[in-house]
Amino acid sequence: MRTQRSALWRMAGFGGAALLFSLLIIAVRVRWLPLESVDRGVAESLNAAVAPNDFLVMLMGGISRLGSFGVMAWLVLIGTTLVVVRKQYKLAGFLVATTVGGLILDPTLKLAVGRLRPVVEQPVAHGGGNSFPSGHSLNSLICYTALLLVFLPALRPRWRRVAVIGVAAIVALVGFSRLALGVHFLSDVIGGWSLGIAWLGLCATAFELLRYHEGRRVTEPLEEGLEPEAADDLRPTEPHEHRPGTARAVALGAVAWVLTFGALVAAGLPLARYRDGNGNVLWDSTIPHWFAANRSDVLGHVSIVGSEVGNTHAILAIGLAVGALSLAAIRRWRPVIFLVTVMFGELTLFLASAAIVDRARPDVENMDGPMPTSSFPSGHVAATILIWATAAVLVMPRTRAWWRWAFLALAVAMPLWVAVSRMYRGMHHPTDIVGSMLLSALWLLAVHRLVKPNCDLAERPSAEDAPEPAGDLSSPAGAAR
Image (cartoon, rainbow, N blue to C red):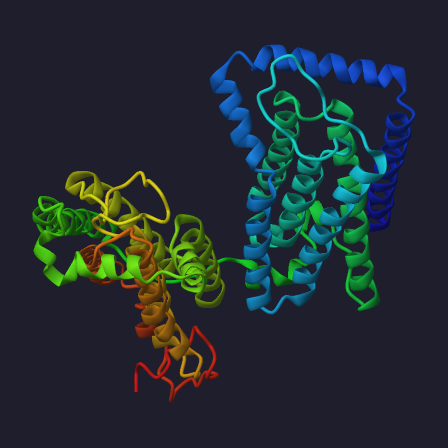
């Protein structure tokens, strides 16, 4: 009886949200004067308070990005990856359906209503397209709440209410930031929230009805999540034996970083002194000039892609994907720590050594224009080597499946493509590439030895005692044979 009453109350709440949105869209369309007066007053007051303060503008901009498509798309993609690898396909369908619904509702309703953005005295941000409803408010409520409902069973009961309050705070802050930046009216934000509640409620109700028709009990989504039975599968990691020695590993990692940095500086400083091609050691002058003399439109397009797959955004995207898949399949934090340590170390080593060495770019046309960092070592190449080498290190020992060799092939082919592309575009000498290889080899070996990302394989039974499927990343892959 309590469950039925709770379900009725939830349906009433979703219906109320849908009614509120309907009233708002009518009021906006007919340009109801009291609503427009309140909207303009709030927009002008917040603009007067926020615009003169650079810190507040920066803060509101940062909070607003939490509701951007880029951030939420990655969160949903990572969440969907986790539940798919754990074979919770219905939860994956729920995440995809709710998110896609929001992406459809936002632009179509903006076009249908056609409301212009606020015009404030001191503009501090720009919003594209029409104003009603607020897409950031709508999609942040849908995405963050959908992720909450899916992963709530993985939390201990005492942390569930904290998670609910945290998600509510994020959604509220994102909506307020859009008002503070002067890119939405108050009714836009409230409209986005009410529409998001109605759409999310419809999807959650459909999920509960599916459970009911399967003969399972109806849940309390905000207390126990959509699928309480999936709690074990939804937890990021399995319980495992605690291994001491973290402080030792951190200290030795710092030593390894300093030694790697010293090796890079020692190799790079002599090269930086010779800005006329370094005496053509390793064809430092010949190869960039040969590429510059043999450029073509087709090769130019190929080199653009090769250069872009090694830039910061691409490497970050690949790193997020590798990290999500590692956590979902291996169910250990150690591989993720290995990945983060390798990539963060690479970034800091590259920036520090490039600043000290300060080597000039090749004396040919730089197709990518001026760069904020110097030539030695190549950050694009080092990052590409390490991200794909890390993926190969995690995958190769864990499966006998044929596709594991694809990771080894990528660990060779991708850095080669990026290296040739960067030299073709006049951005690096051959010895810069050698510097990237030195950085990658020293740092990867050090971190692998300290973090031991595959040490869980030694804790598991041998293949003879507990055979695993050939494609299972969590299996020992015959390491004990």
